[in-house]
Image (cartoon, rainbow, N blue to C red; front, side, top):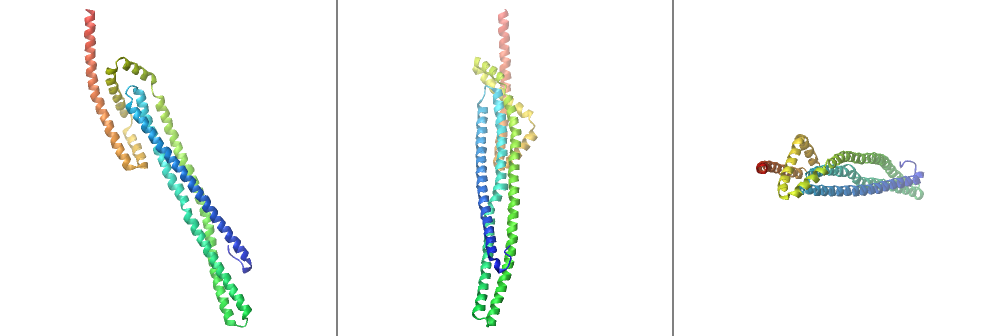
Length: 321
């Protein structure tokens, strides 16, 4: 590139124009890709935030539901699963920003550097052409002034040597620029596809769990419980709270603590370690309070049930007499 005799000056101009067009094309296309991927990541982050809000609303519904125990348990489990989905979506956004958008943003500086190198090469080329014109004028006007002609020839040789070095360097840098562009574009597109595949595979797994959690809601049992509470609201409300606390305590015992803690910790590190540690402590304290509440309610319920049984027995004996 940029090689040949002086008669090939048109070829130099064509090569320079071609390189300039390639740099401009890469700068424009990579800029458009960067904007598009940035919009994609921002919208994905917005979906993540909306998913967190949805999980919060479902969690609040679960906490406020004291009649339908199965529904309350199902909603609580569903909120946890949806929160896990959004944690993986948050990881997706962070990886897109680091492995795709970050790589694309670098090409603004890369294209600027390549354009400066091309400009420097063209300046050297113009310097060489100017030295040649000086030599031609010296030969035309003072052909017998050997000293001036020799000096012009030496200056032209220096300019030609510098032009050769600069052209060779530009050729190597242009080839490296094109090769790096192809390799990095292929790499970042592969990263994008892998990031999306990883998230969607995990999302399918979690949504399968969520579907099963919804299917486990026993609507018939909840309806029967509602009918019992409708017949005696005051008594059933207190027992309903106790039963719900017992169901939460039993769910905690059924789950594996070590595995749940590991999953929660790993997901927490993805988003915000400090924030999730605080949330984890709050959840632990609230669950402990629920367990204590369930134990106290059990004692009260057992006392109430014994007193009710004694009353029923005395009433039956009176009727038989």
